[in-house]
Structure formats: C-alpha cells, structure tokens
Amino acid sequence: MTEAPQAPTGDAPTTPQESGTFTQEDVNKIVGNRAQEAKQSAINDLLSKAEADSIDDVLEGYQTYRMLQQESETEAERLQGELQKLQPKAERANTLEEFVTNYVESQKEGLPNHLTALLNNMDPLQQAQWLQEHKAELEQPETPQQVRRSPDASRQQVNGDDPAQVQAQFLNQLLGGP
Image 1 (spheres, helix red, strand yellow):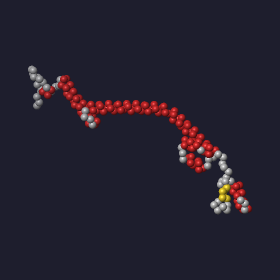
Image 2: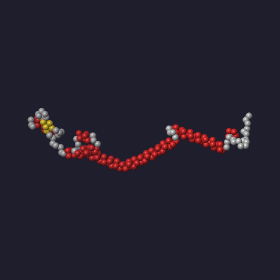
Image 3: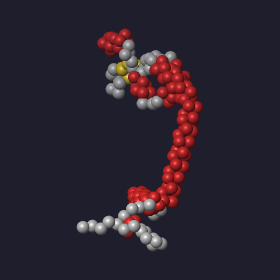
Image 4: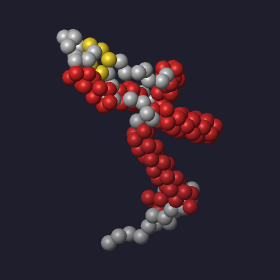
C-alpha cells in the first residue's frame, strides 16, 4: 500500500517532489526552463543551418543580404530609368535605319548584278556610303561599246550584247570588210 503524503510541518521547506503538489512559482520556473531550452535548441538549429558561430553572425549576414538587396533594387530602378530615356532614341534609330534601307534599295535598282552582289555583303549604312562615294561613276552615261581585235587579228570581238552590232560585224567579216 502507498502512504498518503504528509502535510508539511513547521518551518521545513517543501519541494514539489516531497509534497507532490506544485505552486504557481514552481510551474512558472518549469515552463520558463523548458521555454529557455526550446529557445536555445532553436538557436542551435538555426546556427547549424546557417553555418554560423553565433546569432550575431546570422544577424550580420542578414543585414548584409538586405543591404545588397536594396542596392540591387536601386540599380534595377536606375537601369529602368535609363531604358526609358533611351527608348525614344532607339525608335528614332529604327526609323532612320528603315529610311536608309529604303534609300539604298532604290539606288541599287538598275545596277549590274556584280555591284548588287557587292553591296549585299554590306550593312545598309555601308551600302549608302559606298553608293555616295561612287555616285559620280554610277551616274556617267555608258560609254559606247568598243570593238577590239582578237589575238589572232582575223576577227573582231564586240563588247556588249547589242545584236545589231554583232550582226553587222558578222556581215563585215563575210564580205571581207574591216
């Protein structure tokens, strides 16, 4: 059989283990100790995960993170502002490029294939510069086709595709003319 707990007598201090009951002060101490242990355990877990030696190291790292984040946001805002300032200039550049391209295409009309092939290897601005530099040469009227003697001097060659000249040359050769 178990004996009933005895009531405290006189001036003897009682502990919860002796009397089997707890005072509010005892409960507060127990809860406080457990809360402190839980807090310390959480701090230790946090330090372990953060690979830090103290909570001050974690706080310092967080402050550095926040500062870098704010700087990054500030830089992003600055770049966005610059982009907005440059947008009208980009639109203007696109308009000018379209104009130059259209100009070059109009100037290339009627050019011989070898010149068109040369120009197609350049960007529109280079094409416009080349056309401008060679404008005088391109605007000269074509020189009359020249007749030259072949190396054997027995027949003439005509530069060009004029069928009338080729036919006239052929008839001259048949009839023994010059």
